[in-house]
Length: 309
Image (tube, rainbow, N blue to C red; front, side):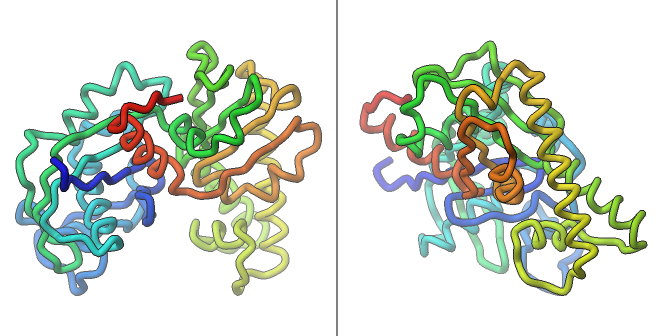
């Protein structure tokens, strides 16, 4: 369809991202309408507050309706940001880790595509009728890196996509993923944030929220005291060293070749990765929406017959 809108969606464990929007992967359902319409999805006779709380870890994102509902919310947000009509045909561009891409691609595509029929729902009080006319899946991390052509001139590059629950690793040799090097480590930013919160609680008796810790890691000004900031950055540095050690143990030597760090964790750990001694050439891509942008770009290239990679 010539009027189909391509929308890239990155289905993270910690956050959902489109090319222009990002929100926590939280979803709380209610039988009755909440007191506010902000962040509220109405679908199938129920109401869902989107971005609230933290979802339980779902290694298989198709086992519940949660990620489908979050996808509808992401599409609504992106359509609203673009000023598009609320009745739209969408070409959904999404991704999976390269480690599970071949195994889960067909199932996840069917989960997102359904029967290709119009779906009616309301988001923040606005009625939407969306037809997911097509769903294309790409390897996450790799899709993001392909948006940065100048980074691919090296013969071998490490890619570390630091997500909420996992860190997905691969090595690119002459721009092509080396399948034998792909790893998925359960060492994402949720582990880091939880450990920081525990250390602050032990040392100072304070209960910090993840939002407060993330704000401090980004260097934003706030009401956080100096002692708290010292603990947060100390523990973030320790986490960064553990992560780099785990990458090396996976057979990828960050001292021997450039390493590209991306994902939400890269944005939070930018100062700590950059300050680490011994790295060959760390490249931090701190745009959390980069995977979603990569998916959209790949759809555009394929529609024009351009070779990907």
